[in-house]
Image: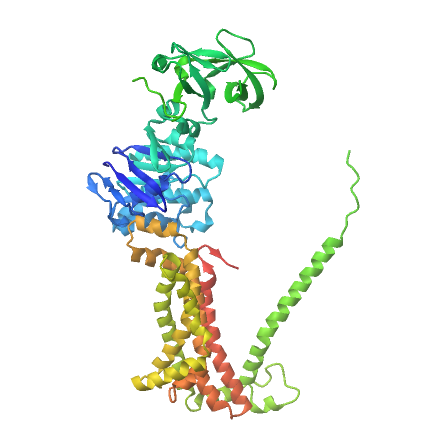
Length: 355
Length: 282
């Protein structure tokens, strides 16, 4: 699958603004972003359900930009399942194969294979109305995977399932797609889904891709403040800080932390310090180089305790071990490891680079 | 341990039971309102002439005879006009579905300039009295040579039923999710195939409902049909003109002959109306 560029003005604002994305053969790419960021529009243009104003879409070196949907050899899982209510499960799964004129034998074996894979065999002769939401979604997935399509598109396939089902089906889906090895483009607004499923994650905002990378990189090194606060639960902490004239330390409220080498160039500048809640050490006693903070709220989550604390007048979230005990209002001491700190321009909110 | 519960107040339960009985009584009354005339007509159509004049009228089929209905069916023009009526009904059904369904689909799926005025304009046909429509139509048909043919009646009835056909089916098409149609496209359908394979079957109950309206309207319409035809009358027009001065017994037979085909048609279409795949609207 080759490069694609497109612009698409929907109303006054561009739904997707000159987006380019290369997806390698067999890769699982997740388009992640808040609602209205253009991720679904992008997917629909890929599918051919939406015509781009400019730019091009190519699959396997073949230009398909203005090719009708049915000639693209794609398959798709819809958010609303979009199973055909007037056809039994068996006919639903077979639909695409029949339309492509496969032999009856081929269709039967494919349908049985997919039904077996998705545990739908007992339901093959039911109508979708007689199935639960989760089962209907399985039918939609089965219908998509029997196609041997060049690209598999998924538009928030899990968002209509309840939380428990979503989690278990997520792992199952990942395994199925892995085994198939089909190139997959997956749209979601759920950051945990994106991180857990994708080979690469493209974070989108206002019709643009803000960051593209493998999930860990995107999580650990957000390209800007938006990505850092959109990914992860809790969101990344962003604190206003000032780099010392020497560039060797960063002043945060009444304390300071050691600065990484990349900040040498930014001596005396205001910066935003980004740090993940789980990368902050917390202690009830003062240790060397720690910064004092006032505890506001403690939320035990079972495996950990989520703390809300204030440093100076800035609030931050800290993930403490499940054994951590303290009372709201107490003073705690926070330690920061230099290698987990990320620095952002105070005005543009973009990551500072060493160059 | 257990706290003493306050005595159980049974008044709400009694009220609930009483309301249920009242609802049942209401339902029976309404059903009877519909069913009793039907029964009486059927009874009269299948009774001998003498028993119709008896007093009090026997309410049970004590004196069944096919004499009245037989004479009625054998009298001039009745069977022919029954054929005309069926032809007109089927023709209207076909034509108004052929024109109305695509129009309804366009209304439901596409945004186009003049959509709202178009919807309003559709209803204008029904705003005009049938007489006002029929007289110029008769003039037109006379000059084109269509006058006194079943086609003339089909033309008028199609014009009359199109608004309901379009508006009913449009709302049904609206209820068919766009997603499902898009899914059909992704899985290899051309737009036309997607319509035929997926949208049309899903819209079938609505189309059935519209066809009931269409057929029944065409079946019952008298005025236009009697203005536009002379010798090729539809059944209602024939009954109206020929039986106005015949005996009471024949009128009952005529009424019976008018009601039954429409009822049969509704009974057949009802299957499509209520049977949704795997879930039945009860």
